[in-house]
Length: 359
Image (tube, rainbow, N blue to C red; front, side, top):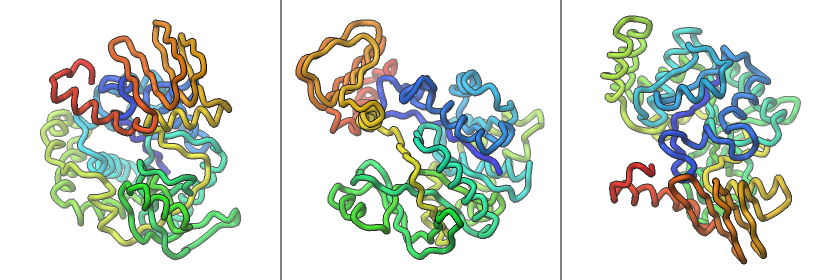
């Protein structure tokens, strides 16, 4: 079994800390270790370093190697430029299938947190067994929702297919649902049929590649050219010239939503996607038993439910409630915590105004 850590994203909703040159997965946000280092340390409880693969882009590779020196050089799959998750998943799967035909591969994001690591490993063990038992199915791991969250996608489950002695269950998937409005999210959390989509997928490499060839045939041909050139003098040239011809689509939309043979394992291991400043405030508040989370030079009175991240200067606050303050050397973010999902819109505005130095 291989595990692939997807580490090419930019984490735009965590600006100004998360930037194009150093995105959120490379920062220590929830502990003294970066999110990607935490992800790696969970996986080595199950897999050897040579079974863990990093999928990323050129600008992040060197920093990832500093943070995770244990992973061998040949286990880095570097896209010349990001083309969404379908291309990345296809490229890595084809390369791993060439290395070990019809291997089981799990793909997971580099920027999530998990509190109960032992339970997480139990779910991975179960998923590996289910991949061997149901090789013609793609699996995903869903999360039992704890609140109506409009920032996440959902999975509607159908009938139970199997279970193990620890009462872990696997279900057929009825449908995937995009990020819903609040009223719909409230409906979903009141029903046992809906799970959060954590973006964790498990498949047999040969089966996934057959689906890729069926649903994204032109992109499949591009991947074949690239993989054929690996290890030759033309490797860099072919990768650079051909990769831009891959369809820019997500693996969810490009393949999963078109395929009916999908199974889902509900997981309950303290998962969070760390997708916004509000989410970080929420998670750290729960971990530390306080609604005021500060880092760096801060002094305040009568503040409530705030996240204050100072840089070199002192930040002084009085009577703030539901406020995020993030200070970096060249930019300061101040926003309502309930609106932190909209930070992404600030980046669009920066691009419109040509302020590229701040991206």
